[in-house]
Amino acid sequence: MKNGGSWLSGFIGMLIFSGSLPATRIAVAGFDPLFLTVARASIAGILGILLLLVFRQKFPERGDFISLALVSCGVVVGYPLLSALALEHITAAHSSLFAALLPLATTMFGLMRGESRPRLPFWAFSIAGSAIVGVFALSRGTGESNAGDLLMLAAVAVCGLGYAEGARLTRKLGGWQVISWALALSLPVTLLLALARMPNSFDGVRPSAWWGLFYVSIFSMLLGFVFWYQGLAKGGIAAVGQLQLLQPFFALLLASFLLHEPVSATMLASAAATAICVAGARRYAF
Image (cartoon, one colour):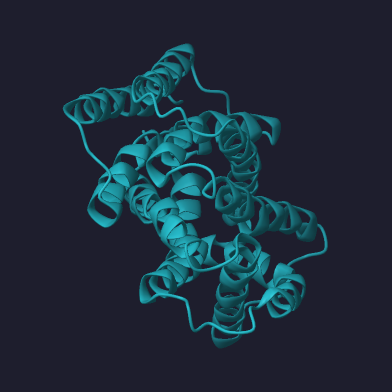
């Protein structure tokens, strides 16, 4: 069994990501979704380049740039933009439930990229955990926008690819180096777009929206990946990826605290059942 350090890293990364959708929901109340996407990537990209320079990291090999481009498309641009657009139509609580599909998406892309194949009981626990979260989502009866749901499904797909590719590359470059290089690679585009989409005035932007931008730029876009990629690389994409089955529930708790969205006994019971599925998936991942 893989060491507990990889699971701790993955758990910290998952906790950080749990705040992403509530923070994005707060930020899109003051910023255009496209500007928010490129602004957060630009801020994180500048910080990433500074880290690479301060710690004198060597330039990636030519063959690594395809993988870095996939990471950039998946987690630097794709997921942030699609989820920000979705949050114009649906609540943070509703959108966070789509995180239940991320472990399966990440595992499937990991298998396509040569990851070891988990045993049959792993799939049973993984599918059961996803089903629990799915049933919980349906039981909430949100009746929200189909457009928002489709955007979140697309966001999950590109994010799963970015997670799997980044975890694979982390074994070679290191966790914070991968996300820093991916951010640096996309910085020329994101910075130009941020300047082009920048509003004429920020006078009407509330402090809460600025805090949302700060969180998704520093924590969601950079620090979270340091822990998450390290956990996936050391503990296995399929195994540690199951931690994201718990992400919707932590996100709902944060949405309840920050956005005053309700937390029910059903949610807590579903979270407990999902935690059991995560433990089972961990046991049979290899």
